[in-house]
Image (cartoon, rainbow, N blue to C red):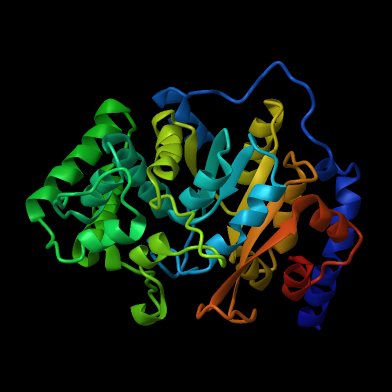
Length: 375
């Protein structure tokens, strides 16, 4: 009886959501306001936003240092066609977000993940972007390998990574990079990172030191790394037509991300998609500045939210965020969705306001309904 009652409550959630919201906030673009999105944040403002919007950290089974979604670039041509430029990007997980940011060129970005370690990973990347003159310099620091000669702004991603293939890791370079990251974050920016925070950053950089560009997604469940693409695979990948979009594919793409990082406009946040604070706080900040969420990358987090019966809480949170009719979810489907590209995952797009309207009308009651709603 208890299980059946919980099931009835779960299936009634769409109706409760529609009744609770009343006014359809998701169909309203941001109203005129005296505030605007900043062109730059101070270090203090950056840290204050991250701290103020964050929730207590949670658990995920993987360190998730590298994406396992090989086909995530396939949707970029459609994204660029659909999403209105100049909005705010919202994402989850590690550095695949940088590729979407490089393609969409938002004015500001927030990366929200339930793990505090993901925030620290992004602070590591922030320091590396700020310290690096170009892609080859960035990659040298990231994988702790001396920069090969002959690399310049015109070098394509394939040639860039091929140049590092035979280069051995350098422990002294690793130690110098780790020290430079710590100084950049705690000295230059003044971020109050603890010794545990710095140890977590060392863990991330140490994984890149050990595996180099071949580092791949790992799981505490013991899954073989051979099942997943490497960091190099993801950076030399293309869309379905063979066009590269990765943030390491060109200096222009790399600089687009570096500019946001140097202006403190890519803000990592600790948050639960179904939690009471992070998404709503970010949405309020964006709305108050007359902007909208242009793209929202969820990876496959929605699958876990359904498993935990938290997806409708997530929908309520999304419904408070400012969007327009071009605002788009980017989601990943693993295993259930067929792909002909040798990948376990496929990337899907979905209209944010369209999905929210169908949630309110009671048409979305399962993860399958969400996947079928995608295009």
